[in-house]
Image 1 (tube, helix red, strand yellow):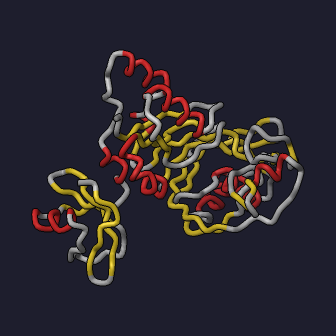
Image 2 (cartoon, helix red, strand yellow):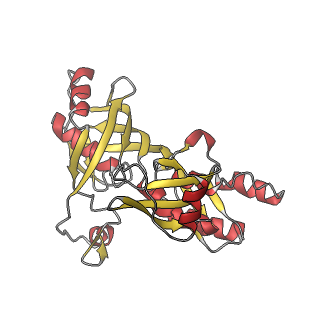
Image 3 (cartoon, helix red, strand yellow):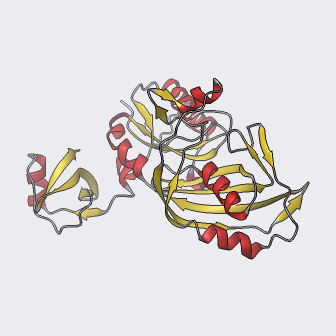
Length: 293
């Protein structure tokens, strides 16, 4: 059985499910899942769990994300990104200043409410929103609260064909729609807008610089080089870590609760640098939610 975490560099044109399907064939392993969906047009880090590592997928999914992309002020689209049809045009004045953009971006840092785009996989009454959108149907969408930790411009403003383009970087919580963030930023500046490009730089502690494409993984498999499989510990990099004593590790192996300094959050319990349990607070103790010994 193949076990471990893969830092996959997803390329444009494939869904996250496509990537998992191809890896199942490549690794001859059915038990594979991904930690955090990427839209087909989005490239970048897609954490993959293989074999026993699928037990930590939920913690990879909950982790924060870092993206780099580009926003276009001047017109909006049906999908809120460059793949959609134009909905509205608002010519951008060349008087728009970098300071105005920066101020609007700073105003979106913190906890904000978002309405998921119609072209998204969110379910309403048992159907995906994109299914309603493709059928030309409108439906009331649920609001969600997300956290924006950092949102800043990383290039100068470029004016072309009544539009304004600029690059950005954002660090955010799970569930954040960067497309919607781009549209809402445009609204705050008084312009129709969309996200013209997006690349996920980091997710679940994995970095794009270290990611491998499917083709690169296939090449390694052909020569029995399994170095791309990272230890299961990589799946909990965003959880607070606690190093356990011999006695604490023994108690956890029996499924018993142990006393630890209270943090009111889940902990990744390590013993001799190996993940042995995910711990949850229960009254004044910590209970093992999952044991990996």
